[in-house]
Length: 601
Ligand code: GTP
Ligand code: SPV
Ligand code: MN
Image (cartoon, rainbow, N blue to C red; front, side):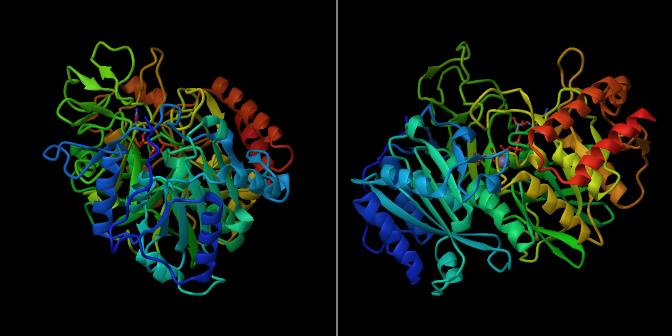
């Protein structure tokens, strides 16, 4: 159960890291007068502060210390059972007009929303500690890096933000004293963790986020989906860059040639796993390194796209993570990590479905109830998560701190589709590539509350994260294309196609290297492909399938397109564009007609 912790007694010398910027001080004072906390803790991000807060969190039962020998310096957090995922239905974009938020966002009028939130926040922190977290998104020396401050009454949020962002003095120094400097205001309060009073509100024009009533991940680590994507995408359009729901990986050939690839897959569709991929034995000498696992901020320089990962840690899906599927993730989360909503064993270790080895004979499930392998319910919540510093990743890319970013050779879109979408194909050009991203679809997952397994359109994996009108977002993508003299090639992948008996046709994980290799071959002008109505498709001979135990007929199915399925798909594209009510750029409507025409020839 989520514990709403009372105020902490602050040790002398801690919690005093007040910035000198008057705009920040005024804003904190304003929130203090409203929320009436018992005391204020100004975070500095130091090791001593972290130790102190971890100890406090354990005393308040917000965290459970795990077995020091098995998972050193790591902790378990159990969220409120009604609060285990992002809540898209309670997420709002609050722009002066509804048009600015567009047809895919929940909109709410800013004035009214502020006033409603102010009412909810009145006295909300009484008897609690109000933490002020300064943080930056992006490498410290990057021109693209942004400063944020998050006010929160959750000690779990503070401890998570220390892993997920570069937090503390580095942000205070970056902001400096200029009261007009750009920075993001974030206010978070747990209130009483009641879904009826749970709202995640974004005010792009004010660079402000207010989140109440939740204690979970993407709803409350305001740096992540709220700032880096929703507010980020709004700023990116205004300032001429891109904020995308993309992993960034490096791939180096045995000859030492290196490419960087960015990939947009919807929530819980394989970004973290792809970013940490270990190539199969057959790909000796190939190396994949991680720049980021969830978010890419991209700029154009000299006609090329350069990307940075604005984050400093990973908030990753736990179930299914094992030494078989993702050894780099297993090594990362073996120490100095927070776990949320996994099972706890009798010897204070963590367990989840899909972990290596036999299940424990007894454990406490994610809610803290007795669990045995005979139990009907899962031990770990399907959206249970790890929070781990990116420094823990043995495959961390050496250029992750590079302020100018890494040059992107390919952009990959991908969703979770049981049918229709082949394993991989390449768009003919930038514009058809933008169309491909715009019409992407995926089966819904446990990362957001609501039904799972339903196919929905999720343009560029940004449906829940685009902070403005989706039509303008498509237009922004098209405009970016006109500025590129050396554009990345655009691809689509689908690791999740199923056969007649409902089994995955493709082994996935490390074997995705085979697809990645074809992508790199295409970037180097050496990969074979045939022209199909949807784009360039590899034949089974074009993909390196050496030492792969998959039947040839499955490969043929994986690389094939079924015209009946695609007729349905085209109808869905039209329905989707129609549902957006006239905001879709002309170019994309034309791309749809071209695609339809190619199927007729
Ligand atoms: P978010 O953190 O929600 O943005 O998710 P993500 O896109 O990073 O997804 P992640 O890599 O955590 O994978 C989500 C789920 O998909 C996990 O249960 C994985 O085990 C599973 N998964 C990832 N890659 C593959 C794959 O190649 N094949 C199959 N079958 N499953 C995969
Ligand atoms: C996602 O849902 O895409 C995530 C997890 O990465 S959360 O941070 O909760 O949004
Ligand atoms: Mn994500």
